[in-house]
Length: 81
Image (tube, rainbow, N blue to C red; front, top):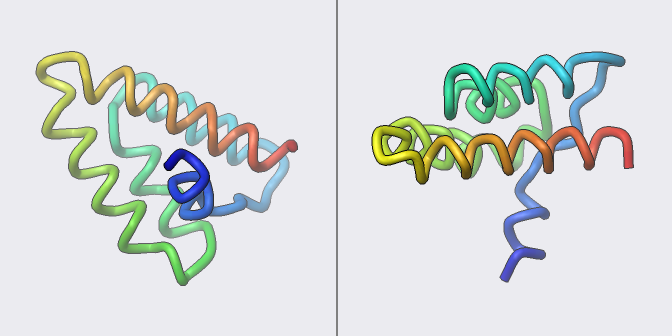
């Protein structure tokens, strides 16, 4: 199940952009995920936008915030890994 999710995470180019997107996901849940859709693979844009919107909506009950921080870490890991 998690492999499917990780396939939709775009590989971000740029030396520090993955770190910046992770920081945005920590401070403003969902917005770093939406930002990664603009900078990554064009085939997964809608997956990232939908995840970002869901993170924003569910951040009010902290579930979205944890999800956003985790997703930002996966973006970071995919960039450097």
